[in-house]
Every structure is written in C-alpha cells, then in structure tokens.
Length: 120
Image (tube, rainbow, N blue to C red; front, top):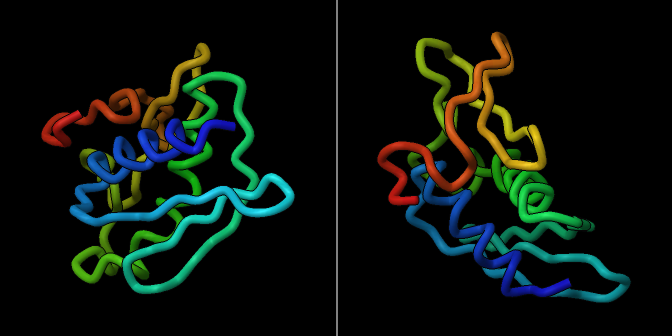
C-alpha cells in the first residue's frame, strides 16, 4: 500500500466534508493504516483497495464516521449534506467509481472529491 495514495484520498474526502482540517496518516504494524484526527484521537483500520474508487470509499467511511466528533463546527450536521434531506450522503462504490449517494433514494450526488464547492 502506498501511504501517499491514502493521504490524497483523505484530502479529497475532507474537501467534500467541508473540513478545513488536517488528518495525519501513517502505516503501522500488521498492515493497518492509522488516522490521527485534529482533536488528538486516532483510528486504526485496514484500508485495503484494488482501485482508487475502493480507496476513496474506505477512507470516506473512516472519516465520515468521526467528523462530528473532531470537527467542532460539524456537531449535529450531515456531512456531506444530502440535498433536501436531513441525513448525510453515503460513500458508495458504483461502476468501480467512488460516489456520494443519497441513502434514501440511491441518487448519485457527485463523485467523491468532486462535490460542488469542495474545490475538488
């Protein structure tokens, strides 16, 4: 695994979440990837992937699950927002590409890293 690929994926996901933050990424023993969040918390996970899409979905899952805890202005917010709904969009692999999808309708909102206004 290339740790730089994971770092690029982290930056793309953070942009979509509207998070102007830094998450450090390191490879640790036994093939685990460790994410160090701005609040000092860490999360170690196996981020295994064959394609860029797999990687983006895996990274989005990790970061999205914790964003409300370590990003002070995100508490109680749906990130990324799902237009017209109170829930966040879900990261999903479709046709080997990573997408933000409405969990209620299944509508594709944008590819991960390309949400409008995210700078991606």
